[in-house]
Image (cartoon, rainbow, N blue to C red; front, top):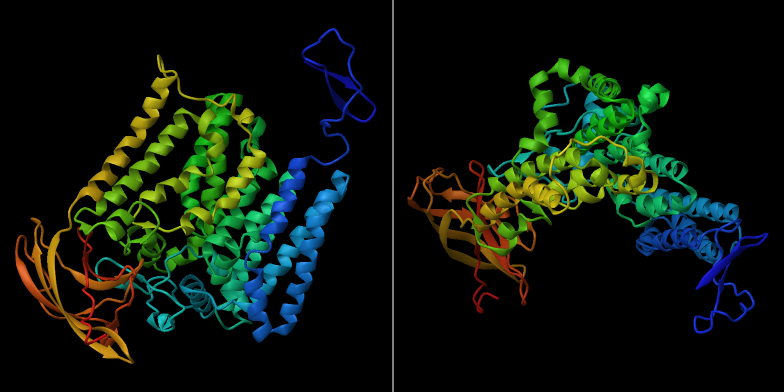
Length: 590
């Protein structure tokens, strides 16, 4: 058994021999000290993990800097010293205040490393290039939406989003806020760096803000998640507008159940609503958080105030956010409503080619294709609705994960890339540190008579089951085309490859299809191949001969025992894909 006795410096645990409970207690032995003036071991661990995370990517940055900017390499070397000192101090300091100061030094070191990374790489990718061009158009008073800018994609670094209809998107497809912020910068920095500077600055400001908003033991975790692991900084260097949205969502999410407390938004609630609306005007990912946040906010306020006052405070919060978002979009909507609406909805309805790490990979990477790819999209939409319904019914249980649930739906989508998951991970941390389950204990939930225990789990599963059925249909459906290939091989610069392929295609479905061809090695699809001959539309149950040529007239085939190269045929309406392996070049060609 164990007894405790207070002392002037804390509480000490005494252990009494279990075999002889009547024996006098032994001399006190220090086994554990309840935190008093010293830091918790968990806090030390958080600081140490954040310090270690700063090593990730630092060597590559230093190597690049030595070749191009030795002064930056010298700063990175000083950061190495800071990392080592902080690691030692995180385990040696004896007071909470001292450990908090170490946390601050870790944060400053991370900020310096991110700035060094930006100086080495700020050219941006497709999102940054498009945002910078949009900023330039704003400066010159020209339309932003609906304007194709194909010349922006002439460099290999700038990728392009291909569509299942055989085309590609060359237009700006994001809400305007990041471009508006980049416009004055572009007046002085006439390059993509105008956009990447805005997103990098947004990441740094939001990281520092989150550091101050979190409880002391969690602050270094914010440094690690935002800056240390090397994930978010690279998105900022690339100019992703989602980084701007993330920065604006941080004050929204931190202690979100306190919004509207007592029935009054107050200046803090109005500021949070304005940040939410601004985030929605920066990038579409913020839209997916909104309904979950409103459900949680209404449930918490209804548990405190009753239905009428809760509805009132939630409505004022929503209206403030909507007006803020509308104000940022107003000029562009008035200038050309149809082009603006199509632009901001583009990522949702563009039918982009498959890409990502989600369940769509079953049909893209592991089978010969699917004639019902649309069902992945249906499943994603149904999963989002199911998660919303489950949050409404079980907000006390699911509320702490409110900042994670919106992104689960993307795992079922056609575009299921990791950026949709990790770009908002600081919000996960903000909720974990500031929204414990206890604050949701009194939140309102709809009454479910005779539903308890296992029945609740069955109900929750029933809400998600339709999404899984849709995914099963998409994954189990056979490819729509039956294709046989006759490649034409050649060598180019001592590399074996394909100059053209004769394709015999049979449409096994009852729907007319318009196939478009590309090749795939590993996970990425090539530019569209040219259809030199063959019908544009393949009638139901018809067959045809296609002669297709790769972009540039030559497609190299990888040697060795790799995954090989595949020819894919895709259609946009309905969305389908057929995959066939391209045979290796004859040994005489190789």
